Length: 325
Image 1 (cartoon, rainbow, N blue to C red):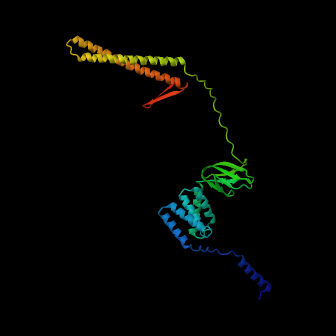
Image 2 (cartoon, one colour):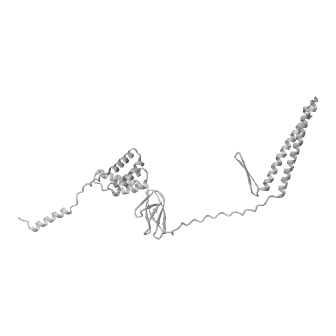
Image 3 (tube, one colour):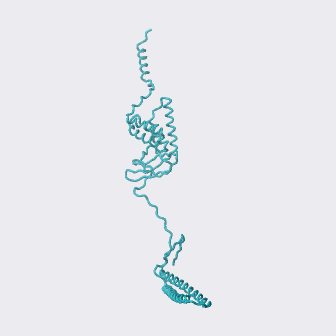
């Protein structure tokens, strides 16, 4: 039995529609083109540095590689490597930013190996996020630029910061400053609303009032009678000391002459010894009078010259003595 032309046409149309609307079969993405020789040399050096645990050197090399390949198909590999290395160096803020770009740029896994790598990158990102704080800034319209702790950021994206206190600053189109301070802990997310404040220097807190101090009493000069009495007493001591010294010197010379002459009388020699003791006593008294007169005269002069309230300090063997009047 022959089919009608209408049925044949509908059958052919259905086959064509199924062929055109059927989803394309998944195919593996083509591998990226080979790296240039100088970039491949840097990759080999970075891997060698990582194998010998020179992590800082490996990080510097991968940063150079990423700068050379950020506009190529190898950019995802470079940013993922930087995120992994910064995570090992405990540079958590950089690691979160880099691993976030890494997982965003990774293609959906097509093989078990790619799936394992995909899950590892997400797990590393989740671990790094627990070490930093996340801030979302809500600034007035047209606020540019936005600074967090002095670092320029994009206010529309999450901002990852180290745990602690941070200042968020924005410059408005009319030149006014908008500021806000936020305290964030590790693993915490905070929203920051930046308010307005007039441009210019910040207000300075008033200085605390100084405690009232009693007015100093007027200082008076040295008493004249005390100066005269000190000088007179000092002169008397000095004169007595000089007189005793002269008398003792004369008597000592006479005794020396008498003792050099031969005498057999024992009582006479004993009398000379007694006189010798008296001469020595006069010498001691003369020395004491001279010292006392000199000290008293010096103290009187200092009292008369220095102003009232001055202090004289003398230090010896770690001890300090203050004289004040």
